[in-house]
Length: 343
Image 1 (cartoon, rainbow, N blue to C red):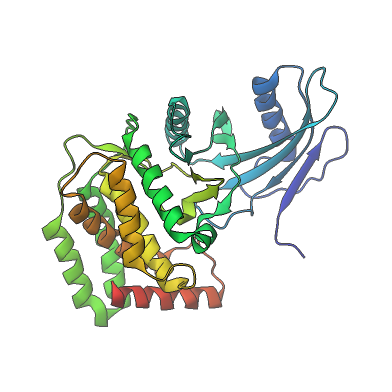
Image 2 (spheres, rainbow, N blue to C red):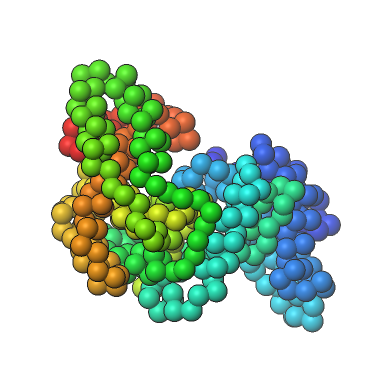
């Protein structure tokens, strides 16, 4: 039996009534999708059929649904197909913040020429805190890296430099102090879990406190969770997904997050990425080529890299949103221990 959970709806066809936790019932979903379609295409647009799949991705902590629609436009002879992504938010202000950022991103010219792409906002349904976006297709960035590592990494560096250059100012601030305060209880958890590693973990955190960089006087727009899991490769473009953690901050934070995840890839999938030092250098060289000169960037990147690695180790061991099958848990524990001893 497939593990895909599917809700189907069609006007007048006796649609299946399969309910999922936290998802609107089919009648409400149909009304939401119809309203969004008519805003986009006109009041005479008719939704013919739709499906909803909330198991298409293993990533992310909030409810994300893919919607596939078939609709008939006024005076159009053929049915038109649409592929949308719906994200349900806990807080209205978070959904509106992300929608505002994505609309600003869409307003800037030139990002496509620099190899950067991202979802577009279609509609926001406030009662359900449901943000509807274009569904972005593409190849997994990890798979793409295995085929043409250097070119892909260089493209990622340029795309990130472009993102950081955009004059977008989210209300959220990502500061080094906030990074440390988020990390402090996580390190305590790790010390409790691995008493034999408590001394080295404590030393690592103390070094982060000692070496903490200042937030740049002119912080940049940062993604907040920039890494392969939130990237796709599509015909020479880097598609950046999931702007939920975007903020004003140090560009080094995105680079450090990326490098911590690439380091994990060399441990978990060495057949895809073997030489971490070379990969890191390729991204940094490309990023620096398309960014203003910053003589202290590398040291700040290294700081965020170390902090991110500790946070990722904690996530591997304690996250409840990951696969809880015993074998999956065992594999994550083994990876966490390996990263802890190598980091």
